[in-house]
Image 1 (spheres, helix red, strand yellow):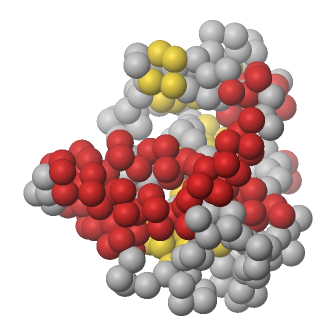
Image 2 (cartoon, rainbow, N blue to C red):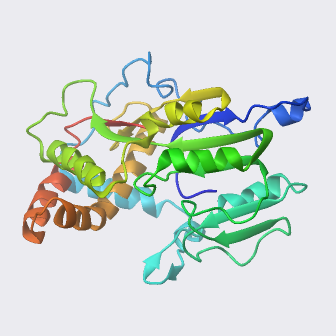
Length: 307
């Protein structure tokens, strides 16, 4: 099961009461950590402070120009997005399930989503189901590996979901979660309480809690998984910059992508929450967001989020 981007990773195995082969005692797919080649990006605990690029621009127009240049460098096939149901979806290697099917042709792969956005061209060992993973799972089929990614603010009852996953894994089967902790912070005191983005982030987290769908699952997944009865639990946490302020080139690229995504979605996922759950007016929210955008583009606050 999959929904979007790479985040805070927790893997775990359902205990087995019978002997299983060594192949079954490993995750069904060998995943390459995209941050492992960076000298400064890795597990957040005990990791050295991320160095700041002294040449980071401090005005919004410079950031806009850099984002334009950055996205223009992508090939046309990547930015040729399909538009369906009034929304735009990525077109580059659509669906992790398809890639999984290509990598493991002898396995049966099932992709799950709420919306019918899947590509019609799939390997013969891949199929898609349109369903809500929080509803009762249909059938008694059990799996060797279940992958759940970026379900932040999408799940109302995480322990129930994880229990469902446990019950639908074969003994010795594996699950992997990749989730984020949506609380922003900095290591150099540039991200402070008087900033509009600081206030926005705290209110966003509160609004998600009021809705009953946490924006901070990454910090809790390991505990939920252990409490369900999984063993061989391993959790990794990564520092991720928001904005291209990091000195390390790879982190700078990651930060630019995170900033671009945040700016693109900021109004869309703020208005509904702040007006619907915090009682703010649309005008109040739009004024706040104008200040948030300005601060994010300035790069003055070296914001991090654990992914």
